[in-house]
Length: 255
Image (cartoon, rainbow, N blue to C red; front, side):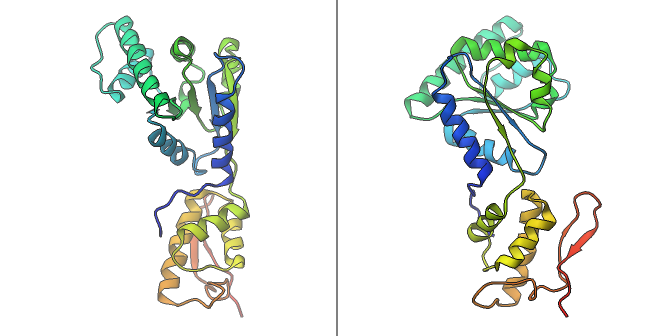
């Protein structure tokens, strides 16, 4: 399987949101919420964004407190955290300003990305600390979660009002799955088999890639026809385990 980043419809929606963020009217409206169930490619997409834009990427912890979060932020920026919270905050702010200026100078979009943000979106102290950092230097903060962030932040109007963009990651479309196979799979695959993978995986990226790996191995052992591997070619072959039940899903047997 090729190692390549595929720009699915979810990725394009994220890119559109970040472009819109640059054009926002209110300078303090710097928050972006990215939501969607596990397995849709959120972490992969945001990790790539972080690398490309020299952004800061953190993973929230269930027991995070403001000081713990600040320590991880400073360590990610290769700074030794001071003892007092006030000094942690001041050092983080100073370093973020420097990182932001350097990134903007290179033409990229600087941001603080916090994955697994469902853990902290109902914690007033942490969310206010994040808001303070964002407001002070007009720094974009991307909160990544699995569907709870938006509802949780309704409790904090001063924070919710700063959300400039919402991005919901949805299951892959047939066109997305077709793109995955075209760009990643090293054997040609026909539309009927792609459609079957789309159906049985529910459009979940992880399962799509698992099925693709099996299809690719089969195709290397059994050279496909010009139009690519079909469902008939893989009749009876295991493709993936059902996410909900764990039961194996095979290609229907062709008589």
